[in-house]
Length: 221
Ligand SMILES: Cc1cc2nc3c(=O)[nH]c(=O)nc-3n(C[C@H](O)[C@H](O)[C@H](O)COP(=O)(O)O)c2cc1C
Image 1 (tube, rainbow, N blue to C red):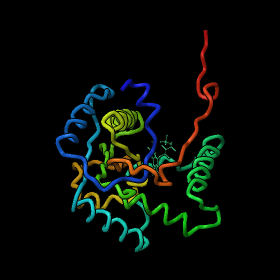
Image 2 (image 1 turned 60 degrees about the vertical axis):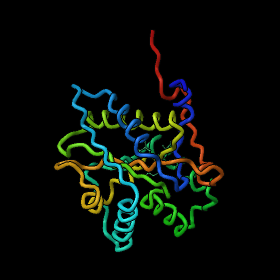
Image 3 (image 1 turned 45 degrees about the horizontal axis):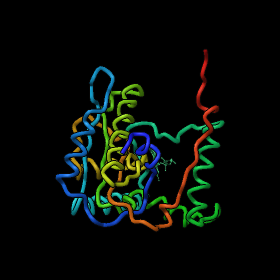
Image 4 (image 1 turned 30 degrees about the vertical axis):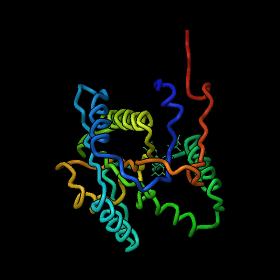
């Protein structure tokens, strides 16, 4: 598969088959992902993949925490905080496309919340990864995490797998720290649920468009 094909083929997939990815295959993919570049080659990322019984235990622990009313406590400022202007508009359009595809109207708060909760049920994926970096690091180092994340997501596509990156998985770090044993001093930037796509699921019909080229690129000569 050409890189251009993988970039175009990747989409956020939120409906998965229960079948786990063989560990040998997973190790092969993660071994290649290590080649992602980073500032001064610091490789600030750590990825913890949770599967099987531990994955189910973690889902229970996070959902219990959320339903008990605990407030989110992310280590880093969430990506949707303080948006305005065109970015706020794009966030709104994203929500309209997502809920619209799922047949959920704006006023149907319970349905929206139930869909939101699926984030912490890892959208039914058999594997969930938590990507962390040292909490003392900042936005420039977070570029490295983003590059690593996209490298990994494209590799998953190349190997016939699907994934959904989730900032929401940074919101309730305590059960993750307890069960998934993150490195000391690390904070979660985001999570990635992944596995084999369940074809035909309505949630996998969400197609997000992009701003036109001229809105995001300036060519000067
Ligand atoms: C860093 C990051 C965090 C995201 N967090 C979430 C999330 O918490 N829940 C979710 O359903 N989608 C999440 N997404 C998916 C985006 O909504 C999606 O990438 C965007 O709408 C473009 O759609 P596409 O990935 O299908 O091309 C996240 C994406 C990124 C890159």
